Image 1 (cartoon, one colour):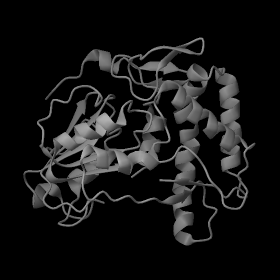
Image 2 (cartoon, helix red, strand yellow; image 1 turned 90 degrees about the vertical axis):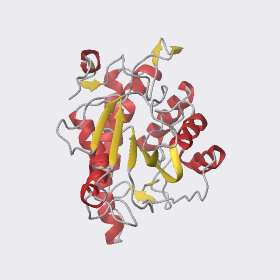
Image 3 (tube, helix red, strand yellow; image 1 turned 60 degrees about the vertical axis):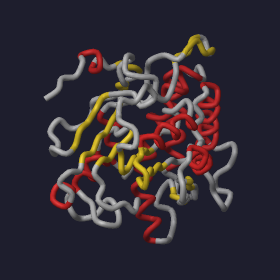
Length: 307
């Protein structure tokens, strides 16, 4: 059994939300004074409270056989790592056979700067509090499968990040990353440039660029992976509705999940960006976010996101 440093549990509270400890890394966003960048502060601008954990749990294909060592970068609530530890088959992860029974030697590591994962887990699962942008202490060529998801804004140097991952994947192993655009599209003109949603996404995109932690990096992933040395790189792009507006039953079902997740993400992604980077007051920011949420509930808005 291991103990967690008390400083890691010293969370920061701002505008009614809980954030990671100021001592546990500099994910996502930086500290600002009078609207100007001072320096990289050891702080994360995404919340880690129960509301944010519920949102992350809503976000759940790699042809890998007999995985022994698996690493989940920025594991969050740990739900993906726990699923992978429980389910695997000869062809795709996740599926319906337990790793412990099928592959007795399997070991799943999930790392994050916040200790918000379950305390009691299977013996083949290990959660570590660490900043993946700091020096890695894992042996090189040690993982059969490395997974990362929704890290836009959490990585300052993506090419270096991918090179480090490449160094730690075994020859013949796999790396999978899933990122979403922090943007919106519509094909029928229902999303206009002067709408709250579009203006809000523009504001977040601007904030990310100002800080040097670009949010819309989804379209660069394949290029960076190839440059890092990965082979047989495959890219899949999905168009996901922001709400259940499509007529197609499958897309409508996806839209239901998206609607719940996005309503929570509006504040999670943007509150500190708006107040600390863009200089908005907390109350004006929340009022604008309420306008965005209202528009997202509008059945006449046929907006989607690319993932």
